[in-house]
Length: 462
Image (tube, rainbow, N blue to C red; front, side, top):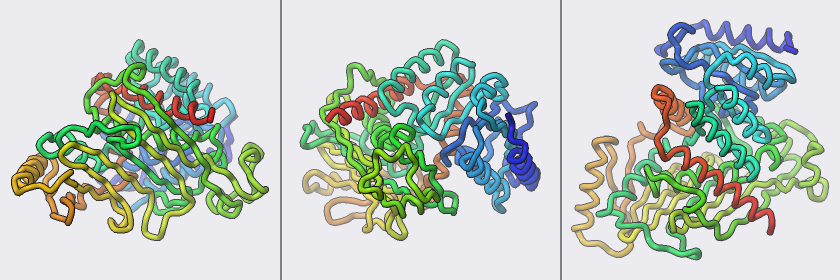
């Protein structure tokens, strides 16, 4: 059943704001838009970030199906905020259906041809599979699988998507971060990087670590997280959640354009998980809930400390390349900072290192560190390599530092995490035009979720 009160107030506000100033953005009607969006059960703010701007070819009418409640209201509030902003406002019109039969209603009506999934991960793989079965393309937020059973179901969904000529794709925003892009380019410039160092389990060739924070701001406002976000059965452990970004970067940077066979190319040597303690007062600050819900009681110590499944580490080899990734969560970032990323690629001629600490003013910076003291010939070679980057990324330069060079990247490329969602959407729209993904993408997604879920399974048995 629809909830008429919620529907009236939310839809009226959104339609009104959606009809106001269109800015300079394209406005599609049902007659000229090739893509019609469905948003299913939007429990995570990433669902709204996909709509932070308008896109040519996407209908401004969006169909939302959800059980109702605060998570839906938070999603619609963000869309309304984007519609009403002064600079370049969007003009989305959200058509909302609420009821316990929201999934069945969406599958029955099929009012769009692309469903966006970002929310509680407990049923996400089921949503993916059923959407594909219904003939709907899927753009899914990470993670698309949080355990090995999900992975098996996801593999079935990919097989069926291929049979039905549908696109199933996940939102990998970190491929759009400029320091990752430049690091990737230089890693495949042999005269600068050489080859990947052979490495070993205790000396991996690739090291990535991310630190996320429970308390954060989104689109200028404090984020209220749902209480289920802290349940590993609903959100997933760290290594199957944000860890997927790190695994994806390893594959994308180290083996670009190469097909990865998860059955042959991946060997997990060790993995572990450990908690991030969260007090009840901290939990209340983040969720606006004054008590731990029943489904979290088994993770609560001494009645007041939640042992959040917030950390994980995987040591594995990818095509014989030793890799270590670590995904961590902390409560609140230091003043002036936010989520951080660290990446180290070790080459035979130089290491490429991204740091985002206090010395970098908590902004990602890329460094080139030669393995030994280099003569002027190397400096000249490096400069020529950076000059070549100027074709695609004008303005990138070098600064000499004590042990190497710092890559100076113009601020215009540093658009921020939220803007990366639009960049992913634009890539996906290009794929939809041809109804085809690059041949390495689906094997890469399967390899990514196999690595994460298999590592969790291994860690859980220890």
